Image (cartoon, rainbow, N blue to C red; front, top):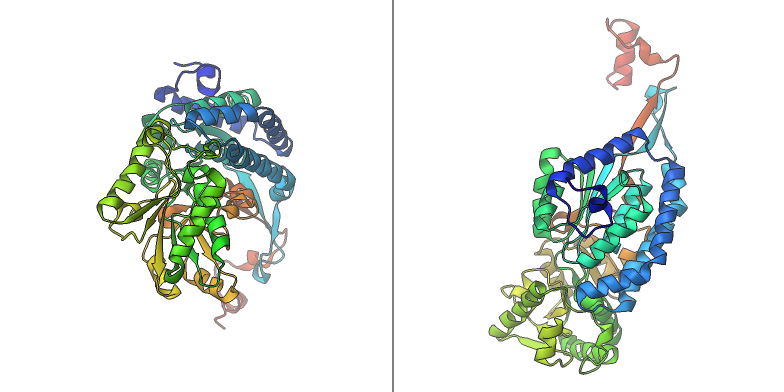
Length: 484
């Protein structure tokens, strides 16, 4: 049996799968003994914020080491700023969210009164991925804490230094019966998903999401699944090419393309496809240089398996005779040694190409020209509903027509990614791209139970409605039912 430090911080040992159920039981017993009120939740969030901010340099170093190299500035923005912003948003609005909401009962139940209370559910499990290993761990964790729950976190095994950093951070902020951390591989993750949580948040691929859902099903665990898919960018004919290129480049090559809501492919009016290619080439030259001499600002592929997967997409495209355009030059030996794939375009890939069959999750961007906007929308409609959608047009009618036809998890119009950073916007997919939502109020609601409460009055006409249903009672029932 491992000790408490093995589970929440201190040693480098992994969690024993046999201990998982005991840890959940400990978290639940403590929650039932003393459910966190407003003061406790605010204090927890405040201490978490202070500890996190003081250790951001350690966080950046850990993430950089796990990736081989990751842009410091991208880490500060994606795993630093976002977490602080979300904690601040939770602290600002928590009192109002916790306040019971009055609800009308209707004249038939008068003079009863009613309210809806947001009650914590108990123990929330969080399974976080490797691509934004702190953001996607701490934002759902902080939300669960704000909602009054205890939390069990399973961070990714693919970022072991960052996961150890998270364990140590959380062990210094929370007692082990309020927040626990499990470190381990995919097998431990499978056992983790099968635990009897009161809510489980998983962020990762659609394929693994299906396995998590199956593991959670025997316990009927409520789920928030943040998955992925092929998120399209649709550039309408009126939108300026240079601005489209700048904003697509920002969204696609941030974090080396390893973003679940990165634009996965671009559809543009066919006459301007080549102009977009050249504009993207200019963007890469300005950001990273022709020979990636500014590669300190470019994030590497996380590990060898992902690197070979992405290389396989490009090999497949070349074998099909597709035009593959590397927008910067990288020495092959350096590329392999550093897991460095430069920003790369694939033109007019068919649906049979691997790059169009799976979520890319890397710095490869397919571009396809369309004959008409209607044809482009038909193509998007033929695929699974995406996690994100990026329409580019200054014509409101055009944008509205796209939004009316394409249902997506979230949308940024005339840019990419930024809907994720807006705390007042719920974040989540639909169907194969996910289920449930979080961020801000949406996350608080997902990790609490809306408990309706009706307060009956001392004297009420409903006391009269009982057998035998004759005379006045018969007429009253028929009147209430609209049958008279």
